Image (cartoon, rainbow over all chains, first blue to last red; front, side, top):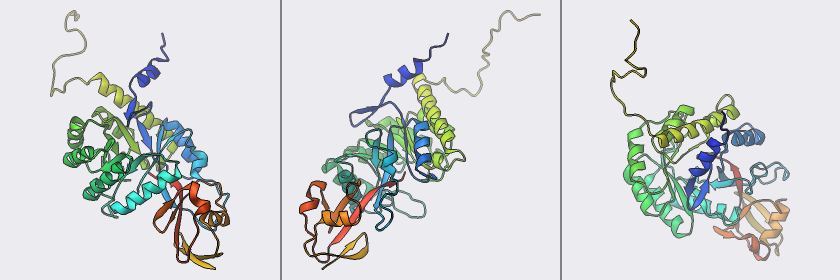
Length: 271
Length: 67
């Protein structure tokens, strides 16, 4: 007999909790690099994501004032918008960007902090990231922080009050997957706030592995937006995150080099 | 006339203009934007009573796609 509501019930029993708020979806998605806003929205709907990142940029002066805007397609009433500091290389720029975002989004305080250190690799500058996190937390922001997969940096970011630690799996936009699961495992083990993989996921199995490691969620943009069919990939990512989470909670069997223990009975063989 | 810089581009406006007047002139009234004047955020509630001054540097930002 089918039990169609079982998985839904499971998801509700196991919400992602960030800064005291519960989310059904553990997949967070970016909104960049899509063909147009319609595709952005279709992919986000297929992903099931409730938290979506946005960037803050200068308004184009002198262009058609009635051109469609991203937030027309992703209204704050339907999604938790997570403004980011993409492209910021200093504490000052990151703080300024998020203060503008807070004004833009009517006092919204949940943000994604990233302070980059190198325009070629987009590797984070961890020292500047920690300094910016301190300033933002004191200013009342709830900071989800992008960082390297260094467990000591993760610990320091948690100590200054970040509400989620988001180490990279590999470099932003690279699609290289999870390069150092052992470091992620160390970060997950020590953290008391959610740990989400942010950056580097290339395909669905990467997201599933992140969740099987015990990540609380996965944040991605390019893996969906630059897939041949972004909407299909968004659906695949939703399933991968759910499957990975369920496998993590189920607890995998121990690894053995060989087992000599077949799944079928050894007794009652014919002949 | 006042000479100001908006999002990096020079612009002139009338002597008595406020930030709200500028936003109207840019056809951004009622749009979801945030405004900074000389590095300080101008809250929505203060746009109409914040006068522009010669040499002001104004930033007007919005949300765009990003990861």
